[in-house]
Image (cartoon, rainbow, N blue to C red; front, side):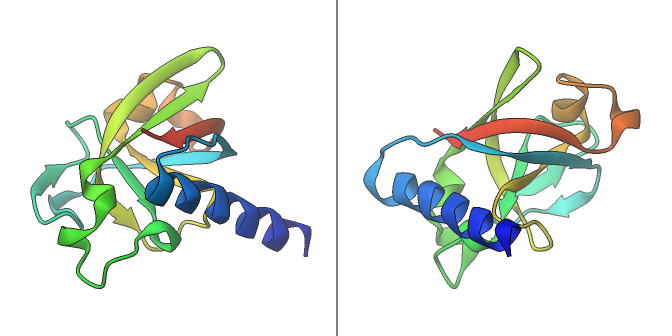
Length: 125
């Protein structure tokens, strides 16, 4: 139950930013992926070579993700004192609202990929 409540609060905080422009950092986790093809924003991506992020599915608000406001935003991610800002170019359908999926090079700029999943704070900018 606690994780569901936290997830709902995290979603509310991030959605608040998307619609009002008020930043609210989310404490959560990040994993990485290295797929290539079309991202949810309708452009070609290569998560093995590009710096990008897939945002949790719960944050997408448009039936056609190509038109979603998230496609014009980035996510600022911090882990162990390191911070990066990466463009949102994809959707993570399996991510809970407090988890993001970084491209392999974005994840590697924060931590060793052998970790798989790291604790982060992140916010949409």
